[in-house]
Image 1 (cartoon, rainbow, N blue to C red):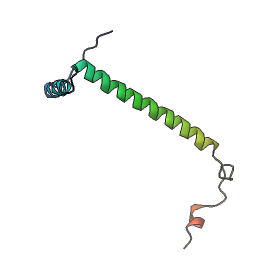
Image 2 (tube, helix red, strand yellow):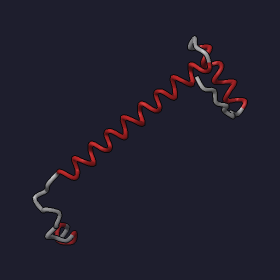
Image 3 (spheres, rainbow, N blue to C red):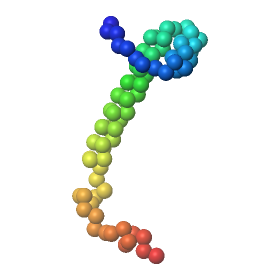
Image 4 (cartoon, one colour):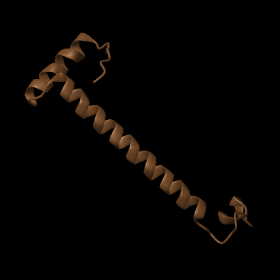
Length: 77
């Protein structure tokens, strides 16, 4: 597995090490878990966004993209 060097503030590193110990894992294991979760969520968000953008393109309000009214007409008082 390739190795990368991270530059972290000392206090963040110290706290992360304690969290890893409390969870019964290594710092590397903790970071791997967190990064896997982050990338999974980002992938899910991207897929959901793409799906909903397609749905918006396919949705028809029976206007065929041309509104025959102006905002003021809809909100006449």
